[in-house]
Length: 247
Image (tube, rainbow, N blue to C red; front, side, top):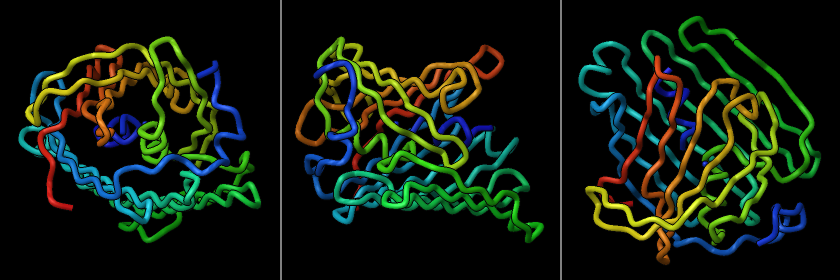
């Protein structure tokens, strides 16, 4: 549960038209290496690291700690490879959650407009799901969507739509630019833009909730904070930037 919620929590004119999705995206800073604290119900539940390199490859490591780790250990590694237009081409994930060990590979074929999802149970040594579906061409996973969002500079009140897929479902996700906001984290003080990313409530994920992302307005375009607000029996989960690390 811990990882399933956190990974999604880690994404002018009313919409982002397909022509923009196919055009080369503005360049991001060539390297990114950031460490985040993960807070759940006012306790530190774990930590995460986000890396992005000059080859348009994003990596996320997610690990539980403290009481949460004793109850349900999480050690996940997620990798997303993007092309020059910031469309996702490959996603792989190795997930160790409790007694479960899963390996997932998702391939996004932009030219053939196909997505293939393959999930294996490494403990039982069997395929859990092998699925293919039609896509619209340029599609992002949730981490690729976050990287794409870093390339855009929307003003409060503006909205875009982003084709997003977890490999099992394809959805057009609405992103609202809510406000400019000054934010303090252990990494320092930032002027940010806050976005509401509508992935819950049956859009991409059936669970009810909201997902907000704060991105710095400087040239670094760091994701400074990510927060998922979920039903009371789960509570809110917040990833907050702790520090920059060596790539």
